[in-house]
Image 1 (cartoon, one colour):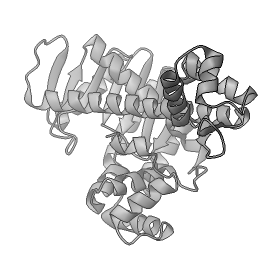
Image 2 (tube, helix red, strand yellow):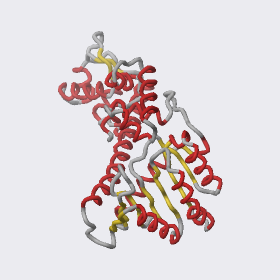
Image 3 (cartoon, one colour):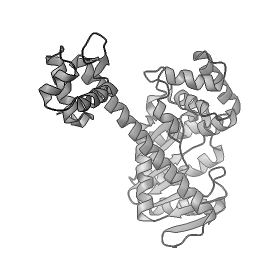
Image 4 (cartoon, one colour):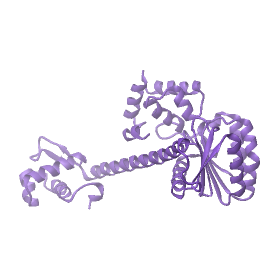
Length: 335
């Protein structure tokens, strides 16, 4: 019955017998089950690993069965933790795939013009994106990293964006949380939202990306400078993977209209991401780039988090963050 929670049949039977016959030792349990004492001891070790029994010098078996209600709560918590870890690994894989596609395109020529096409320079990128906007039929999905976007670029994008929305296309964009601190970007996003665009924000984004009609995607050749060039991807499998990456990030992002959200740890999404990056040993400059904020703001966020954790170093901050549950242990291997 409990095999779905990782408990084998023998261990489950031993656990049930310990609840009904707490006076039985290893020999007695082996006799009731009809197995060897060695197998009983292995089952007890398994039960101990799952925290279903605890060590006890008073009991003949050396263990005492944990109350079923408490035991099941522990098992369910463990399963939930494993599911969360698996989701983190999946998200990390999707993000890595997107970065790999962009990196590959930067130094390898397209092996099939139907699947990959290079765009060189900002003017060619703008022209192609304008063409995609004009021919789009159903939906445009965008990752827009960088908290403060140049005002002239924001103004230039309004005409094609307005035409898309007037045609009834669905437009979904994920910006960085830090856009709320840059008035031109903030007002532009409000302009989009007021006209029917769906906008959400996240603490960080894996790559700059535009997906049109789930059939083609545009990614930069270099994440560090999107103006250098871009790659248009039409490969069905690759575009499907990028769509999955977008949906995963979109689901967890905060609706723009909701404003900043603080989680049950008392952290904003930006602070939660900053402490994770801090624990990984990233510099203030690297953290600033990931969050889309200035170096000064990144230093302030890091200092405030270290003060809240009463930590004197980044390493100590990471340790204390894990101890408080701010950073799950499995998450430290995510990126």
